[in-house]
Length: 188
Image 1 (tube, rainbow, N blue to C red):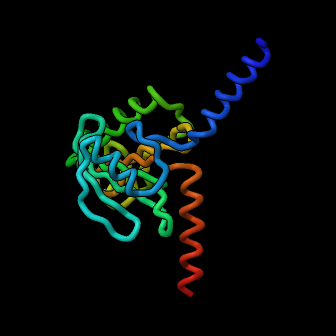
Image 2: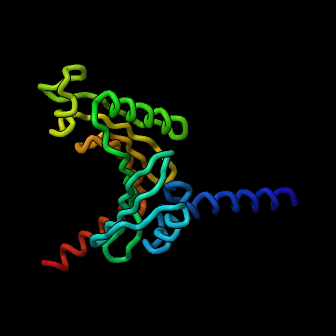
Image 3: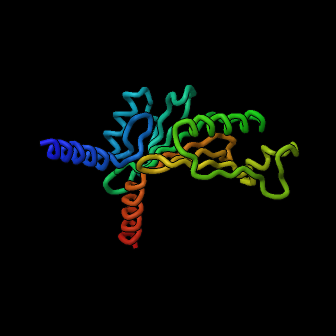
């Protein structure tokens, strides 16, 4: 009897682990169609802004700041595959750099860091006074990659002097890529 109970509990555990094999954003599984994901975001206080094809924009509060979200879905089935968070633009390098390292530490408290890099490309360097120019010219490479259940997370500085955090679902990004490829084939 104990063997059967143990086998049942083990089966239940394995089923639960594999039943939810998607990354989560704010506790919301990055999965399913866009409409259900949108409803979950609205329940979390986000407001819909606009859309274009399979890109949907929202704004709301995340990690104690007002942010803009880009939600990407596959073109045919509208399966949500990626959430991109844009924090407010920073006006100076010290503030932007502080924000990056602060968010990096915050994510490291929850997710294992896979790899990171922080450097400027020639002719720029940290401390030269031209860091924001380097950011705008995409000569600033500050990014941290985290391993998350069902996907990965990237924290990076983007060319608009904003901190960008990307949540990408491992399974659904493949669905989106296949649908995009098929759409291209259908177009030609």
